[in-house]
View 1 (spheres, one colour):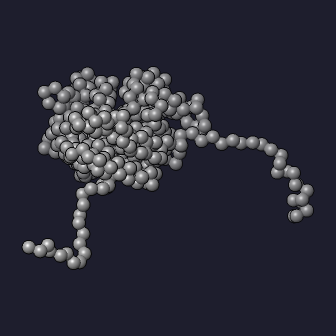
View 2 (view 1 turned 90 degrees about the vertical axis):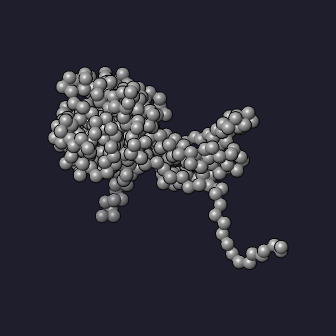
View 3 (view 1 turned 180 degrees about the vertical axis):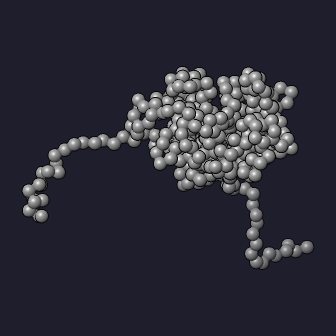
Length: 382
């Protein structure tokens, strides 16, 4: 039979080449709270549930505990996705903290239940907190979960009633996933932590995950539980001392604002909240792309070229959007020997530079008589 003749124009849809990579969702709050009178069907105990209508959920949150107050504070700022884990109430503070911190032994409870959120709700919490319920054991649990989920924890320094006590207490923490906050607002209870969670989600949605929590007006705040002095250039002010200890505080200028860019990390590269979140976003975004595009596919030169093209295209887009200063993915032959590739182990390397916040700007002021030099001519001109 004669070979058929194609005469015309057609398009083949090819699956090779660069793949558009979608950045992961970041404005998702993971919240652990108490409420003895909440609707049990809406908020089952120790079970992550996804709330997409924060205001609507308040009516079913009850009036006891921290749940309703936290959701109300969040709702004054924005209406993000919130994954809620409700825990039982116990009058003993130690027992209550244990319920909040939770466990992964024999089932996931409390904070540890957030590890199951993505499988049960389809969304991964990126902004974690336990407003009004935070103590040392709870912070430890939150940070361990944040490391697994690549999330950030926003927690009030739990036991401090003075500036110096807060500085002393925070010295016990050194994790890049933790942003410590002090003091509470005059709203007390879960207020300052709830507003930090909400503001982080709001900034993600309106400016981006590369912008820190600091220096953005926080709706609904009318004062602080403890007085904090602040001056624009005063390192010796209360706010300056707290910031120097890696504690975010609040100050008032045309509204109340969080003041502080730092995590609790002692590693300089991850000192800024924005650097940690950029690292987390890049890692999850690239991992998901590789999972969808390359995992379990045959290792060929074409596969590697496609991966590199896709990742670097995503980096260029983020740079154009000013989310990062730059990044580059590359294939390192030293990390990909013939034996490793034959064993199904492929290594793609990349580096990146996050956008640092303009935390300090120095203005040099000089007094001079220069502008009197032509005084006589000025008089003549007049």
